[in-house]
Length: 263
Image (tube, rainbow, N blue to C red; front, side):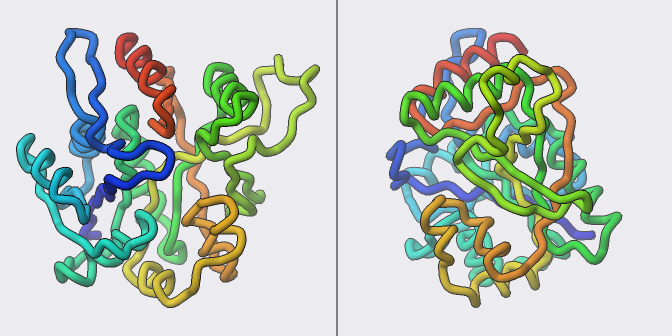
């Protein structure tokens, strides 16, 4: 499979304007932008033929080109990362059997998350959309609960069936766990990792559908697939002792810097 990784990045984030250019401090005291750290994480994954940052913003383009990334410009009308990937595919005549969307706010993405996703798509030709899910450790679950109690919208959880097809994705913490049971280590809560793999035909179908009601309410682009009866395979990945979290809110900067300090 010819595989291309696209990293969609937009400046006008509702919750965190300018987020791709937010600076994080590394353990050695150097500082790098969120988009650079995410690009470096994507570059560490094997199995891709090319990696591109895709954006409609010249500030992001200039920053990405400065640290050596290939940048593809897209329409400012793209409403989410999946639409931006589809636009890049069409606008730049990208030839690929598989498009991997690595969201631009995930600098803690281990390379095997991407590699396992690519391998799962190679092993299952019938799957045309897939995304990784990670069993929540105690630290990540506590972050989810802390965000919800503070009224913040943080990460996303996934609920899936026995065949690993997604049933629902939500910014709420699903399933509900009684507070008295939260100390157990085997809670069935899965963190949705913001990476997607699509066949080109799935991206074309996505662009033919209107924004769905659940997609609009949750603000989750992947729900458009489910609302149109299109299967999304959940690929279970392992943390291998690494903590995973995305930069969703300004409060996440300190969380991610803390994890970077432990790596």
